[in-house]
Amino acid sequence: AAMRSPLNPSQRIATRLKWLDIAPYVSKVAPELHPADFRASGLRQLIQAVQNGKARARFPKYEVTPVIVGADAVPTLRVDFVDGNSVAIDARRKDFDELCRDLEPSLRRIVRSDEQTGTVREGLDWERS
Image (cartoon, rainbow, N blue to C red):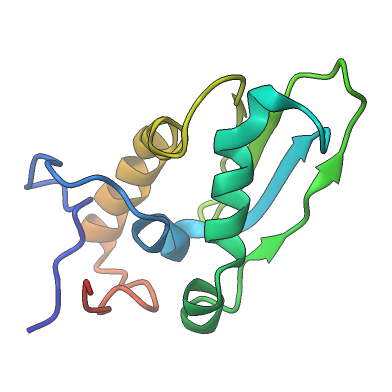
């Protein structure tokens, strides 16, 4: 049986969001960070998840463009969503889970409107391994 997305509005999210839960709703990820910035470890983890082979194979459409910024710049997670909205999240000292949680309101908005319009996103039938 296909796994229902943990983002389903009728379910309270108990599960931790994985990148695979987020990927179907994303068109572009542009993390901004300085390579040596110790405050950006969660962001680096997210970049690894985003570039992970399994995720890329299932969602070849989203773009990943890491941007190198100066050492004093704030590490930032910029994400463009399939509905045209974007967010810029201050990633300082946030771990992977916190960054995913910060994306949740945008995801829920898309999931709600998808339910109303009957839109099914590609890749949402993946099995949780």
